[in-house]
Length: 367
Image (tube, rainbow, N blue to C red):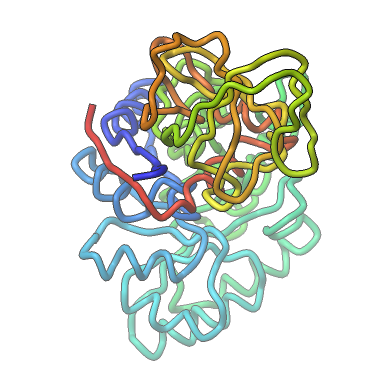
């Protein structure tokens, strides 16, 4: 196998358990497994977490929820990006709960509930400052007035989303928390309803703002490994490849496309079986590092579609063809994190996981 992604389901479960212990027994911890569980594998991650009894699985799209139901998973599912108009009847039939963030969504829910003679459970999303999905303050009165006359809708949850809870220098989350409390207060006073589930916290909100736990949190990124605001969580994803060739080259030898690297001295160059076609960012050309025998080795030359070239001059001379190379994850006490790759590739760890996780060759392990 030239390259593959290894997913440690044991580490995933320990990360989830750690979050549960952090928030305490009275807070529902609902894992976010959208986008193929951030590239880790939707069904595999959901199945691994099932014995830990998550109260919800949170996904982005109806199609992801259908995959879970088709796999026999009966855990409640929350669709964070809501539903398209034609999806409401089937979602109700399959016990899939939509996030509602526009007044017209109430019509779709009311109609589907009436036809099925079943109250339609929903979570209403309010915009406390993210500026994406959600009902803004100036539209909330109209929304509540309409909701009050809906006979076939069950308001099960009220939710929002932080814009920058990961920024330790920002006070904006405190403003959002206060706005969320105001929305909840109006809901209680005008409709005499307190939803069962109240949630605003993503991973950063969960770990940095205990006052924002309410009674449910939605961790995503920390389930899958360390990040700047949570450095001690375990990495779940590892990208591995093999050495295909090792050669000694003299000074002034161009390496790779465009001759972007010229050897300054005699060097030992290893060609490794991975590239941007396997999800490894091209932006890491001449700036990324890999782990070989637990030692950091710099990438020299451009990352090409299925190959990279690495300076292994300082590695033991017994290095051989077929040896394992780690591009993301741990080896021999060293670690290359998704945060590190994200910084060097001028992106974020979330995108790194999704890109590398698109590699179709995955091995799932428990350790």
